[in-house]
Image (tube, rainbow over the protein chains, first blue to last red):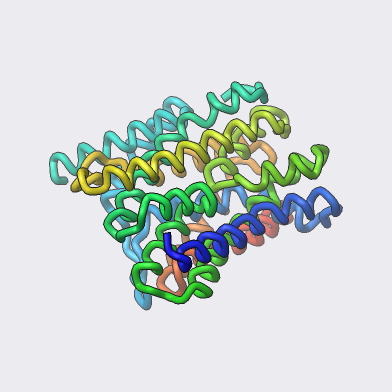
Length: 107
Length: 234
C-alpha cells in the first residue's frame, strides 16, 4: 500500500465514521424538535424507495433517465415473492434466480 | 421476523441481507482487482472505511488519479445519507450509554438501518443494543470477507453477472421497502405509497440533472417534506 493509499483510507474513514457516529452523539445529548422527529419518521420509506430506484433507473446526465428493463423484469417475480411470503430471503433468492434465468435465456 | 431482540435473533434476522453483501462484496473485490488495487488496500477500504458504494467510487477515482482531497469529499457526499439514517436510528438508543451509541453508530449501513426499521415494526418500536450489534457485526464481517474473496478470485471469474448476483442489492431493497410498506402502522399504506411515488418521480427527474448520489439525498429529503405535508392534510 502506498502512502497516498494510506491517506485516502484514513481520510475517507474519518468522514464516513463522523457521518455515522456524530448523529448518535447529538441525539443522545439533545432533545430533537417535533418537526425534525416528524421529518425523520419518513426517512426509512423515502431512503429505501430512493435506493430501490437507483437499481431500476439508468442515469444519462443531461438527459431523462431510462428504465433498467432487465432489473425491472427481475423485480416483478421478486416483488410477488415478497407479497406471498413476506420474507426478505425469498425476495432476494427469487430475484437472483430470476436474473440468472433472464441472462441464461438471453431475454 | 419476530419480536425477539437478543443477539441470536439479530444474527437470524440479518442473514437474508447477507446475500446482498456477498454479491456486491464479490463484485467490489473483482473491480478492485481489475483496477490493480492490492489485497491490503481492499482490506483497508472494506474494514476501515466500510462504505459500500463509496468504495467503488474511491476505486475509480484512484484509477483516474484524482487528488486525495476530492476523493475524500466525494466519499463524504456519497455517505452523507448516513447522517439521516443515523439520526433516525439513534432515536431508539437514547437510553443506552454514550459508548454503546458510538459503537452502534460506527457500523451503520443502508441495509442494517433498513433492517432495524423493519424490526421495530414487530417490537412495538423497540430495538436493543444486542440485536443491533449482531446485525452490524455480521454485515461488517461478511462484507469484508466477501470483498477479499472477490479480490483474490478476481482473475478467475470472468463474468460474475451471469449468476444474477448483481441484482441481489436491488432485490434486497425491494424486499426491505415492501416489508416497511406493509408493517409501518404509524404512517399507513396509503400515505407511504403516495410518498414512494413522489420519491420515485423526483429521483427519476433529478438523475438527469445531478449525480445519482445527490439525487438520492434530494429525493429522500423532498419525500420526507412531502410526507409531512400530506400527513397534516389527513
